[in-house]
Image (cartoon, rainbow, N blue to C red; front, side):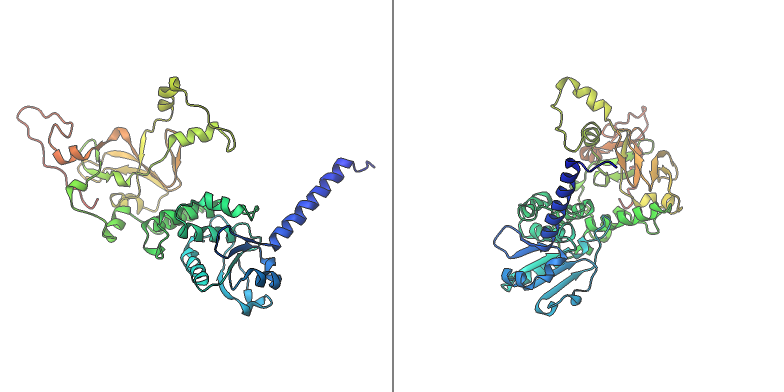
Length: 378
């Protein structure tokens, strides 16, 4: 029988040492750098009441599925319990306003706060970052994470939670997430993802132009007009520029050509034209809009987009709840794609003029320009 080599023994000892170190870190409590008494830990820290007392802990945020009343001495603290798993698709952001306010109240009363999950690695760190973002505007999710790692090296929120932290930032750290259009779009995207995962179209349809009307965000001032996308054949309005979903072909090119750790290549001026052509987009991707209702109400997963003008009904693009790949290589999900060759994106100046010259249409002698088409609800 072959004996165990010194290298094998060294590897085993190193693994044991790392396991012991991780266990110690899970049981320890780490203070977030700053003047406030905010700590992060794993659940095992609750077994060390002496340490909690020494740190001045008066309030505890528990971010995992367990009953804190089963821990010894639970009645000595004020608790905030967030029942959640450490999964990418868990909705943790919905708890941010409540947890942030809980921490603020605790600190205002002179207390100290412990935020814990199972290991003190993902859920608890995410909630700590949510508080830091709301109270230290100069921080970003990643700079806040770097700050916490100064005292909690194993801090590592899952990618889904990091996305939600950025969403929290874009929502302006509002106390009323339910009224935030950005949050509602994110929720709806999650619904769509769940539906398409089982091969179904979503049960609920959300049209961004209608949501904007409901929120009272639609203005009538022509001076506020942005670029307008119109059917090239009949000039019917399809979308304003604000409903175009931006995607970055350059980011896709960088992703394909570089690993996450490799440095970006230096710019090559001679290859600029070639790069621009290689990532050229042949489509505009739109948010779901009310003129698409007849197509989307079929309950199909994909289909064609036709001009809503019944006298035209030109094919302008395609839609697919599971997503479509743009000619530039970027995958957009869900996708409502309009071919650039079948529409015109007109500037506000052209929209205000709307004459034959402004519209880019040369009329035969003696023929007048037809009246502008009705714009509907967009």
